[in-house]
Image (cartoon, rainbow, N blue to C red; front, side):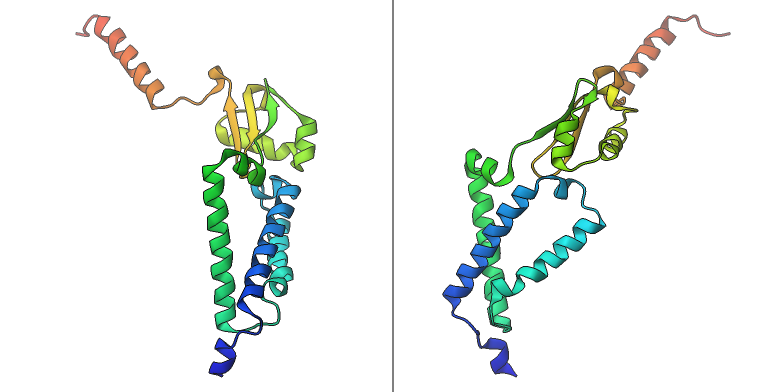
Length: 186
């Protein structure tokens, strides 16, 4: 029993190379697929991600079901990820290469339907993002951007933005000034 848990089925160097190769291949594949998968992870996308992890499992671990081999693969995977993330934070060009760039999906109150189709999104997804930001329709937007990490950013036109605490404080101050000018009630 203990022997099976600690006896690694393939050499550590091969396991490290397999892990790094699969990691890099998945980074490239997910980059090619686009930001939509990250922006709107639905049930189908979740199933694909779960199956994808199962599909590449043997490519990573090879003919090795040992505990030590699995932990070694996890360490290599996490180490590779940490290294790439740190390099992306250090070098802007590398981050752009790995993550991509923001995509403008709408500007000046209308959608860019070509960009939306290219990202595999639906107008209903963007309408929902506009509503979550406090807008009633795309006509009230100045800019809609899909960030590389999948976040949808919606900037409403100045007059269509939801009031914030500063706006309420300004109104209270104005009301206070108006009330102070009114004659006192008997």
